[in-house]
Image (cartoon, rainbow, N blue to C red; front, side):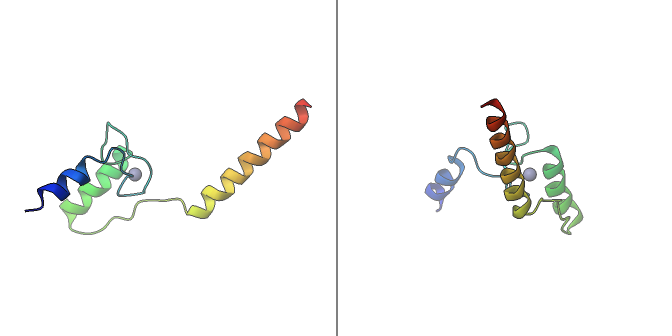
Length: 79
Ligand SMILES: [Zn+2]
């Protein structure tokens, strides 16, 4: 029996979306959006993988750097 393992797994509070690894939302748990839920549903129904559009990790880093730069500019402007 793997009851203990299952319980441990399901009791973890916020798992990332299995489709795109973004934080899941209550409304579409365990997915983040209806789109990801639909992709998963379609995958099971159609029997073939639909690849969700996922931003590359590099883009997130670039965006964060850009935002940090803007914040820095704002701060400088205020001084
Ligand atoms: Zn998702």
